[in-house]
Amino acid sequence: MAKNTETTGGFSAQERAAMKERAAELRAEAKRSKSADKAAAEEAKVLEKIAHMPDGDRQLAEHVHAIVTSEAPGLAPKLYYGQPGYAKGGNVVVFFRSGQMDKERYSTFGVSTHATLDEKSGFWPTSYALVEPSEQAWEQLGDVVRRATGGEESRAG
Image (cartoon, rainbow, N blue to C red; front, top):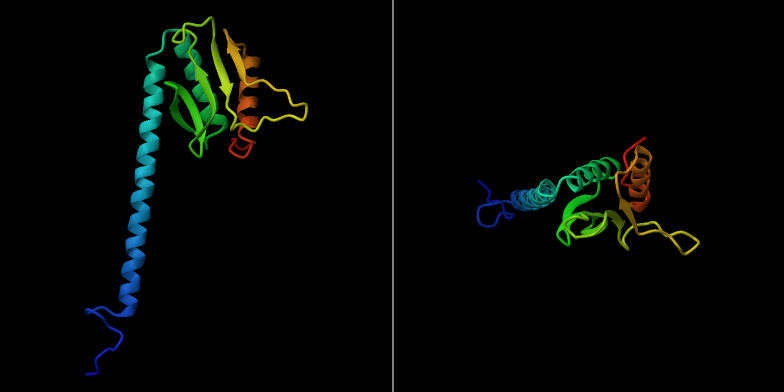
């Protein structure tokens, strides 16, 4: 029998390449799993924070959460200064602040400097008061979310 000169340590070059490829797959899978676990944990923290908000603000935050996750599913929920925020690439793009928790007159929905709302006029709103919003106001909030994410993360339709 001729000895395979391409073997080292009992494995051929092809076997070593396959093992390296499989190890890389396992590392990528572990990274994805860890990332998914982290995202799920962040969302759970946001939902827990919302659940513990005072009546009125809790309902507002739940509605904001539903709109943001529907209009921009690519944004990841995360706590932002202890309140619900929604990030892209780790940077919060839009957020909700409970007026009652902040001891303010009203709750706010805001956009950060990472939002893509820049207008040619050099003047645009960065936060909105939420006091018993009408259906039209909720639709406008959805539009702000879509524009804040550049439309690329928006739902199809």
